[in-house]
Image (cartoon, rainbow, N blue to C red; front, side, top):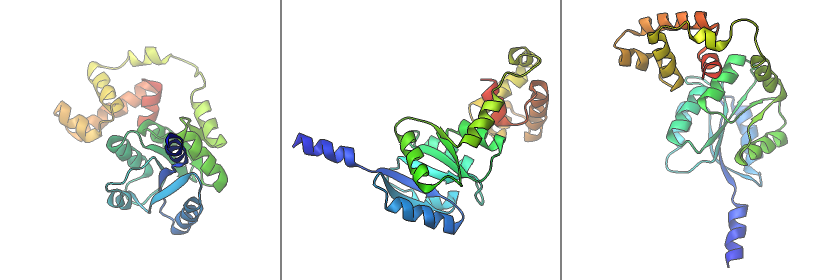
Length: 219
C-alpha cells in the first residue's frame, strides 16, 4: 500500500499557469501542455488581470509568463506571484532580448528567461529543470547576463557607493527591498518627484541606468 502511495506521489503532475496575450500563441501552448505527461494546465490567461481573476483557491507550482503584456507586465506578475506564494516558480517567456527586462525579471524572482523561438519540447524540459531546483535561460539571455557581469574598468563599485549621501543610501536600501517610488516617498515624507530626483543622482554616481542594474550590482 505504501508503494502505491509513493507511486502516486511520483506521478503527480506539476500544476502550471500560462500568461500570454497573443491568443494563437496561448492556444498553441495550452494544447501542448494539456497533453503533457509532466504538467497539468490549471490556468491559461491573457493578462495580469485575467490571471488574478482565475487564480482563486487552486495551488500552482509554476507560471510561464510573457513579459510584454497589455496593462501590467510579466515582471509585475512575478512580483505579485512571489508575494502571494513564494514557492511558486516563474519563468519569463518573450521575444525580447532586452537586458533591462532580463534583470528586472530576475530581481522580481523569476527562475528563468526563455525566448519564444524555443521549441515546445525544450520549453517543457526547461520548466522541468526549474521544478527540480534549477534556473534556466536561453543562450542569448545567458550571454547578456555574462556580459553584464564582466569586470568593468574604472572605479570599483565599493568606491562608487561611498559617493552616496546618507539619504541616497537609505533610498537604495528601500529600492533593494522592493519598495515602489511612492512607498519610498511616503516613508521619507517627501514627494515622488523628490525621490525621482535623488534616484537620478544615484544612477549618475553609480553609473547604472535602471533599478534592476542597481540591485544586481550593489547588493
